[in-house]
Every structure is written in structure tokens, then in C-alpha cells.
Length: 166
Image (cartoon, rainbow, N blue to C red; front, top):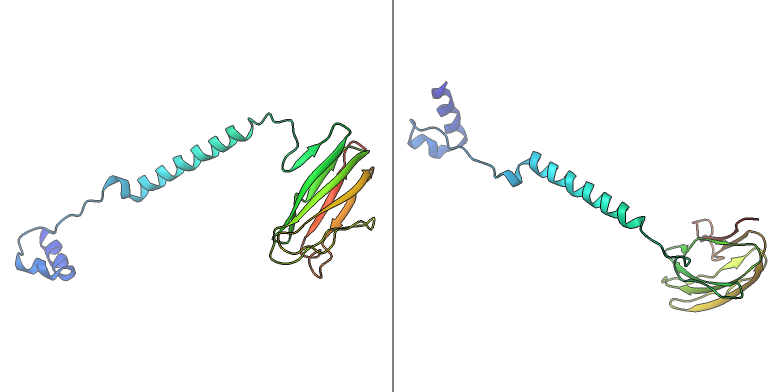
């Protein structure tokens, strides 16, 4: 068996032919680069990240609406809407019945966009980095909005005002 190892090793490494009575060198792989160890370390890192995100995500005690939304004392809700990557952000806005809604729209995309609602309220076509304010008035029912540029609505560039508790 030892003789077969020598023959085999001389085929792989011609330098071993010089000394036929020595065993082939063993190569040791450091523990950190071993595939099993690397996989275990990766799993631990992923689990730690998931737990950290879950723990921090549940700690929010902020009573204010998310994003650029403000609610005035008179019940007027002003929402910042950004047009980017063929989407409106946010794409869904929830309001209580009878809320006066004002949208401050900004086009952060390279192509022009607008925002049109089914009740004929709309912004003008906005170029990049342009803004417009759209006063929807008092909202008592759901409203659907979209970008009227050809193909944008079909691509998913829509916005919905949902009346909750109605």
C-alpha cells in the first residue's frame, strides 16, 4: 500500500520522483477556511442578524405616521409622495373618514411623471426634482390614483387612498 502511494504521488508531482522512499506531503487546511466551519460561522451570523432585526423592529413606539406624513390639529393630513422607479412611495395611504388630505408630490425619477385621481384631480407632468401640491379635500371614500404617462399605470405606478373604519 505504501508503494502504491509513492507511485500515485509521482504521477501528480514529478518532484516526488527524486526521493522515492518519502511519503507525499500532507497539506493541512486551517480551521477557519474549512468548508464545514465556514458554513457554521455563516449560519450563526445569519441567525444573529435575523434576531437583531426582529428585536429592533418591534421596539418602535413612535405614534406619528410613517414617512413624510403629518397630521395637523384640525385633522388635515399632509403626506409626502415620491415618484421613483415607476412607483409611488407610499403606494397606499390609510386615512380616517372625513380627513382632509393634501399630497406633496416630488418626482425623484429621471423621466416625467404625474399623479391623476379618478375624481379628476391631478398634478401637472413633473420633470426630475420637480414638486407639486395636490389638495384632495375631505376624503370619505377610497380613491385610486396613477401616473397617466403611457404604460406607467400598467407597469404598477398606482397609489391608493384607503378610508379605514368606514
